[in-house]
Image 1 (cartoon, rainbow, N blue to C red):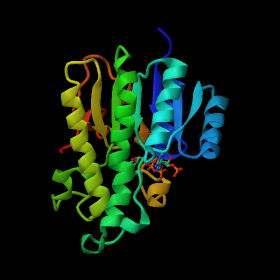
Image 2 (cartoon, protein in one colour):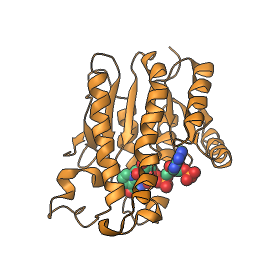
Image 3 (cartoon, rainbow, N blue to C red):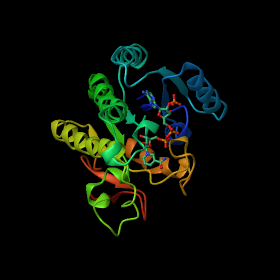
Length: 246
Ligand SMILES: NC(=O)c1ccc[n+]([C@@H]2O[C@H](COP(=O)([O-])OP(=O)(O)OC[C@H]3O[C@@H](n4cnc5c(N)ncnc54)[C@H](OP(=O)(O)O)[C@@H]3O)[C@@H](O)[C@H]2O)c1
């Protein structure tokens, strides 16, 4: 069979780019999703210089026409998709207020990308994933989306009370379970992952981990064996495949 084909949304920088880099270094054909053609082309050029088989896929996950066009392009070029990494995510400035000051508009803005965008991209790509012998969907969630951790006063994540962002990732976790249940009788596996707190533009580079470290578990789940799990939530600390409480 030809090389594994993986699409990563929001792969022009941060954890998405590092996921593309890891997969590309392993011989995967990486489809670099980017809403900006310029930023996407720059990422593709870098990955190609490093030897990866990288291609640009222009896709704004909040724009259903853009998502449909991206799916049609993948279909024309490859006729299937082996892995979809729903990585694109935002924590907009409008959503920085405490819960009592968070507006519905700020929640909506966050959900457009982190929740509705994932549903749009997943549904558009599913027909292509079904044509893969081993389709994999990886939803890039967060420890902050874990209801168990956000409610636990002993958790290091307890103080981060971001209504819009955290609940968007809780919704993403529920969405992960929903797809995994529908696809349980197929060869497609659907999992959520937290990359941990990584230094990226999303958090003004405050995280103690690198984006590359965060990408390790994302990339691993994109290439799970047939006996790997589905419908789970994972992190790489202390070891790959460590279960995160919902
Ligand atoms: N960094 C962390 O500590 C951390 C922890 C847990 C989870 N995460 C999750 O990891 C994922 C990647 O975040 P990151 O930290 O790498 O942040 P980042 O560096 O800000 O990257 C976010 C990526 O998403 C893209 N994006 C945003 N809106 C988009 C849209 N509508 N359509 C397509 N692409 C869009 C951005 O594109 P532009 O360049 O065009 O803006 C960028 O490529 C997110 O889902 C985030 O929630 C991050």
